[in-house]
Amino acid sequence: MTSFRQALATQRWDDHRYYHHSLVNQSLHLVSATSFLCSYVLMFVNPAVAALVAWLVSMTTRQAGHFFFEKNRPATFKYPFYSLLGDWVMYKDILTGKIRI
Image 1 (spheres, rainbow, N blue to C red):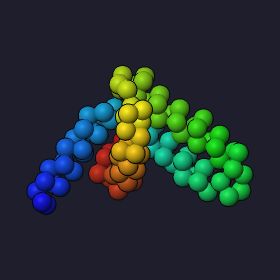
Image 2 (tube, rainbow, N blue to C red):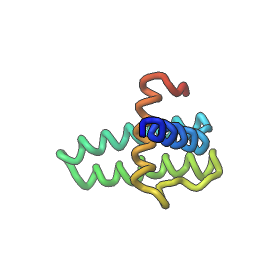
Image 3 (cartoon, helix red, strand yellow):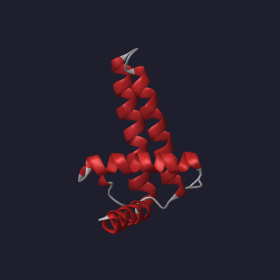
Image 4 (cartoon, rainbow, N blue to C red):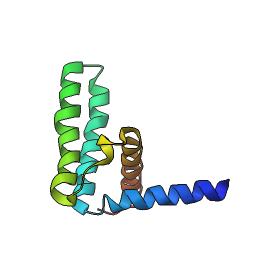
C-alpha cells in the first residue's frame, strides 16, 4: 500500500510541476496564496474587503499565470479541491526552498 501511495504522490507532484513550470506563474501563485492568507485574517475585520481581496487579487493573479504564461487551463475549473491542495503544497515548497523562484 505504501508503494501505491508513494507512486500516487510522485505522479501528482509531476503533474503539478508540469502545469506550473513557469517561474512567473509560480511567483504569481505565491502572491495569490499570500493574499489569500491575508484575506483569511481580514475576514474577522472586514468580510466584504476580504472577499474582494480573495477574488480580485488572489484568483486573478493565479488565473493570469496559467492563461498568459503557462498557456494552459488551470485545474481549478475541473478539480477545485486538488487544485487548492496542490497550490498550498507549492506554497510550502517555495517557502522551504524546495522550489526556487
